[in-house]
Image (cartoon, rainbow, N blue to C red; front, side, top):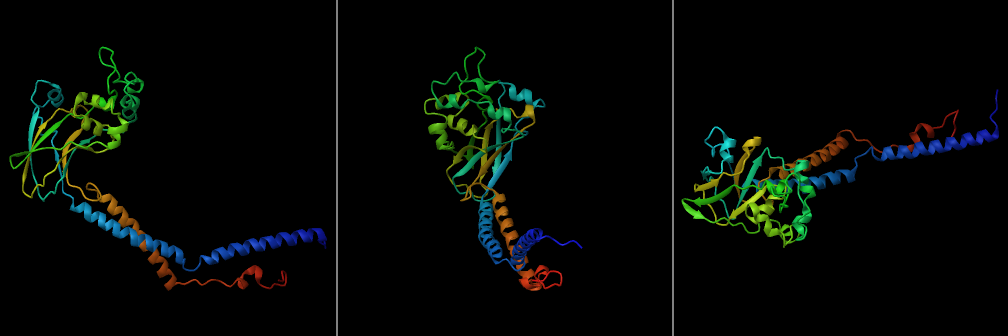
Length: 320
């Protein structure tokens, strides 16, 4: 029978001790999680208490917003050849639409134009602009990034250049409520940072090449487009008459156009997603906290006694 040398025995004992210590520490970690994790339940409950009321308040505010959407691209073109109609500069493209207000709309009423199937986040489209040209007066010739709309037919640089500026939305709207004309306020529809710094105070007025300068600055932003505001209140059952100059060509790429009239609240425009997301997250956290509590009540798992661990029990082969 082989007898382990003292050196090997010492090494074996050391390794065994380390293994027991490691297993013991791991077991303690598992045992500490075997009961109800009070901090986790508290955290889940706190998230639910905070998120659910915020979500309900957001949903209530969103539901209180009155939003009217009127798609007009199809109804404002009577010709079968819609592309030919919109490209004919001699054709009168005026179109009259009537919208009945279902609920009172407290001013200011925001006017938006909405385009569908128009991918303004396409990489080539987004890159086709020159920020330096928009910012600095002496950067007129910096048009390298503006292709294919960098120069005019005579080779002169276009200011502002690029596809974004070149495709500026140019439909116009005039409004009347109950046959009484109302003014559209187009002040401060562009971001203040755009007016003061992004587009530059010296270059900015040149943006009005294809339309109103503030509308142009709003168009340069890749988000829903604000056209203007109606500052007066509009009552329920009032009739809004909109005379539209249908100039913008969405027909060649199968796009659609719509006019949006909307009130606002502390969350901005109508948006149920924020409220639903908050309520859903808060509800899930409440549910998880409740599951932990029920699990602890129905099938509790008390912390174990380390003396009952297999490696701590007395054994003829491995005495403590």
